[in-house]
Amino acid sequence: MDAGRPDPFAPLISAVGPGQPSGVPAPPPAPLPPPLFPGQQPQPGEPPAPPPPPKEASAAELVGILGDAGGVAIIKLGGQTFIVSRGDVIKEKIRVMVIDVTKRLVILEEAGEQFELKMG
View 1: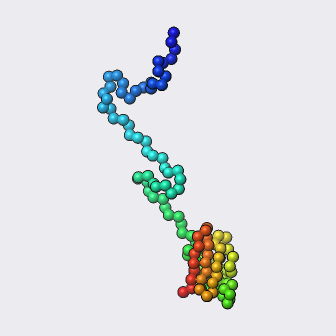
View 2: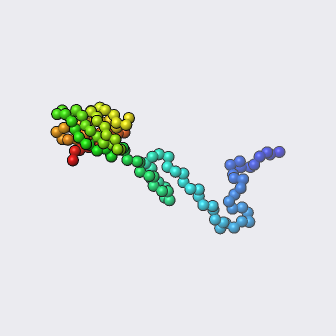
């Protein structure tokens, strides 16, 4: 006595069975999954991703520079005034990189991005 099916790899149910018309439409395909990695193009119909919020250092304003060697700068940020020197950190995330008296320039760094503040 034979056990099992004659062809175990043949599907149990076929799309077109005996006596069925062959013009039955197939169901629509499933939607594509979202992208796995950042920077991939959005799929059609998806809203674009919102831009990242601006860095806080971009709103900083240079009020003044004190000292002949450019040792101290006065910076206004978010309604607060900070008196800083090179290497200081403002609000635990913005580092003072350069204070240049001759160019009247201060360079701040926040999250790897640099911002130049100029007098006037």
